[in-house]
Structure formats: C-alpha cells, structure tokens
Length: 408
Image 1 (cartoon, rainbow, N blue to C red):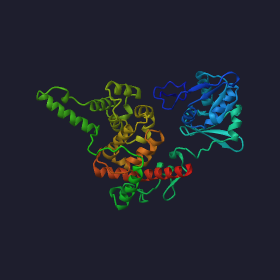
Image 2: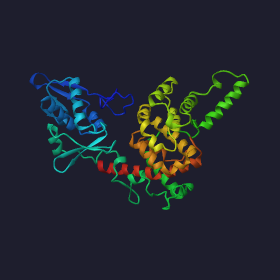
Image 3: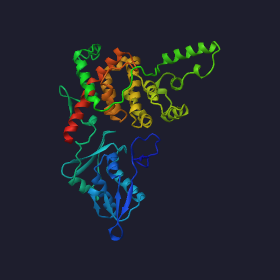
Image 4: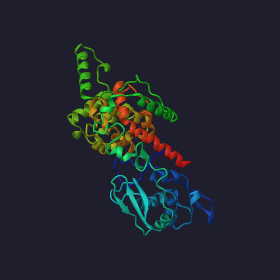
C-alpha cells in the first residue's frame, strides 16, 4: 500500500510521518445510504488517535450521523471529500501548534482543557475549544498509557529505580561504579552478564529473529580501511590486471565519495538529498549494507547531536525493514566499538535516540543485544558494546512485559 504525508502541505522529500490514504465504500441506497471508512483503524493508528475521534469529526464536519463501532457516516461521501475533511482533523487535533509536527498526544488538564503535548519540540499547546469534537474528547479523553511507545514512558523504571530518562540523561546506572568511571566495568564480561545474555536470548527467541551468521561480510568504512583497499588495488592495477575485480566495490566508492566530499569532517557532509541521489546513482538503495556505510560515515564523536539532521534520510532508506535496521546497528557497532570507543559509555543514550526517532525498533534492539557477535567487530569489542547497552535493553524488555500485562 502506498502512503501519504500526514501533513499533506509538507513537501519535504524526507518527511517521515506517513499514513494510509482514506479508503471508503458506499453501502445501502436511498435514505439509508451510508459511507463506510474501511481502513479507519489503520489511519487512526498512524495519527495516534482513537478511531472514535475521527468518526465523530467526520460527522460534525459533514453534518451527518455516525456509527462509531462500524466506522459509518450517513450519506454518500467520496474519498476525496473524506480525505480533505481529515486534513482539518489533523490540523486541529494532531499537528503541534508550534512546530507542526504530528508527534503529539492529547491530554486533559483540569476538567475541560485539552492540550497537545509535542514529543518532538517539547511544546504544549492548547487545542481550540470552538470545534464540536472538543466537547466529545473532554467527555472521552484518550488513555495515553495503553499503546504508548515505551521509550517515552518515563514512569517505567529499570532496576534500582532508574527511569529510561535517567539512562538517556547519563545518570549513574548499573555499569557505573559511582565514581564517574563508566568504562571500568565494561572490561569484564562476567558470569552475571552471561546469565543476563542467556535470559535476553531466551526471550528474544520468541520474536522469531532471522538468524545472521557471524561470518557474513561487513563493510569497514573507516578512512584507513578505504585507503588501504585503494592502495592494494593500485598495486594490482600497476601489474597490468584490469576488469571489474580491480575496482573498488560500490560501497567503498560511495563511502570514499562521502569522505572526500566532507574532507573527513561530518559537519561538511553533502545535504541528505544529494546523499540520497548518490545512493540511487550507485544502485545501493535496495542493499541493507548501505546502512553500514551510513552508520560509519554520517556520525562522529558528537553522534547524539548529529542524528536528528539525518532522520529523514535514514527513515526513507530503512522503511521499517528489519534487515536494514540490523545493518544500521552493525555500522554503529563499528563506529562506536572501533572508531570512537570513548562513546561506549553513551550507548544507552545513542540507542534511545535512534529508537525514539523510529529508526530502530524494540524487537531488533533486543535481538541484537541477545548474543555477542563477531560479524562486525571482534568478539571482545562486541561484548563491551552489548554490556554497555544492557540497561537500555533490560528496560525495553521490562517495559514490554508491563505492556503485555496492561493488554491482558
């Protein structure tokens, strides 16, 4: 199914907030004719709003009676009319009043004040109380506890009373010795760690992960590695050997282009549109390994500040494909474990940021942390990286269990 921008006025080529277009069909005839919105549940889920709000809004806007349980609006209404009406709902009840980002939640303050809490910019804006739907929402406020992404549920805690916001903020945690030396404990992967790894692995097995062999090829996109491969190929060519086997592979060429364009400084990288066009030019858009390259070339030691500018590019390429997510984790593992080992202590913050921006899913992160792998880095480095990630992974698991209990 094709998707459309939640905010249809936004023409940004990397706008990452999508929803399925309205699908409707007409039922009955004469005075009993009705319009059924067949995919209203999926649209509501994309907007993070209860379906009943959308049905009631259509009724108010179109001057028609509705049946909330069956997603029906009395009368004959074509799809275009419903889609245009939905734009009004999005502008009034979804988009942030400050940054126009749809990543908001509706909350009821006091008895009759509705607010939009934006998770993107942090602003809280008042919803216009003039629309008829306002009163309906006040009487039927959303339950923001159920179905809420666990990364924003700061009320949940990790062992020792630490919330995920504490971990993301870098407060003292399980792998800190209390003296600010967070790296000290990452040197030893002891029996306790092994037990935790086994526990994580057992639980992750239920998620039916597609196993990846440790000996699969990984792309080393450090400047030193590219230079070494180039020197080697120059030596081969000087001996008179020609053909495609003597040229840098496409991943190397793309990585070399990025490094050359930025002069080795990520702050000088080409804009994301140019990078995307280059990926298409090299015909790498369908190759998960491209995320290994991007994971090692878009960021440096300031990765936490560099993620946001590239969210659109990464989201468009990943497109919720688990293989691409795994490849991105592999690139980050090389970046942190080999190029910038000083970042190991910040792995919980880094994973949290990628997760919160929907670039890495909960399932993929938990599976990645379930076992040490030498696919991208040495086994020792892999142990250190996953040990540092342990508090965040443990929190994800506990939040998942709590969510299951709430559903029950």
